[in-house]
Image 1 (cartoon, rainbow, N blue to C red):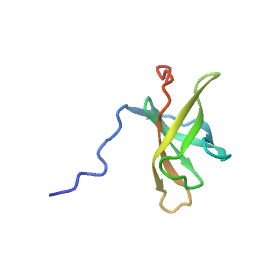
Image 2: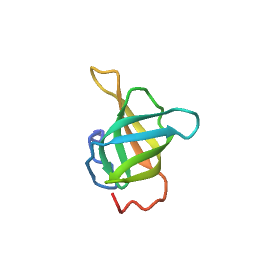
Image 3: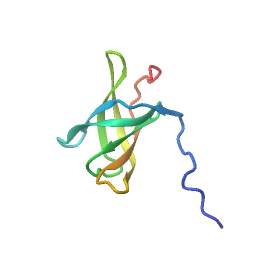
Image 4: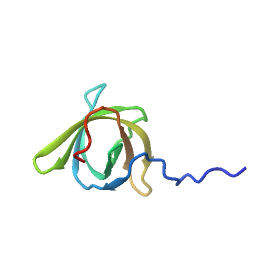
Length: 104
C-alpha cells in the first residue's frame, strides 16, 4: 500500500499571503519575541523563527490584521520544520482561542 502524499492539504481554512510582523510570548515561561509571517487564515498562521520550539508549545500572539487593529490570540505549535541551508525554522500555529476571527 502506498503512503499518502505528505504534501496533501490538511488545513481546514484557506490561507492568504500575509507578510506582517507578529509578536509572540510563550504561555509557560518568559520566552518572547517577534517574527515575520508568511500566511494567515482563520485556523492558523505560519511564520519563521530563529529558535526551535516543540510541537504543542502555546503562545500568545499579537497580529496586526488591519490598520491600527491588533488581534490578540492564543495559538499552539502543530508543526515545525528546519529550513534547508539556514539555521531558522518554519512554524505552523493553530489558533486555539475562541475569539471572533471574521475580521481576518
